[in-house]
Length: 85
Image (cartoon, rainbow, N blue to C red; front, side, top):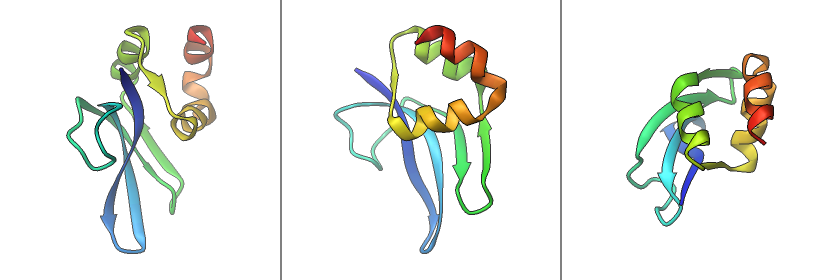
């Protein structure tokens, strides 16, 4: 099963997170299938590759709670993602 979840990057006390499609059996820092965006909680910035995210969601990938909230806050995706759930 594939999930969309966060992968921690950055340095100590300055974390940024990549949004990745990854197998559920992999650890947090494990090998990902594809990088589909990033989230910077300090500057509150988000970048998402919309076609890649929609592709994985259509194939049955489940976003984690945090990734789901990040995608929901991005109003650009609101209509497309809510139609999938």
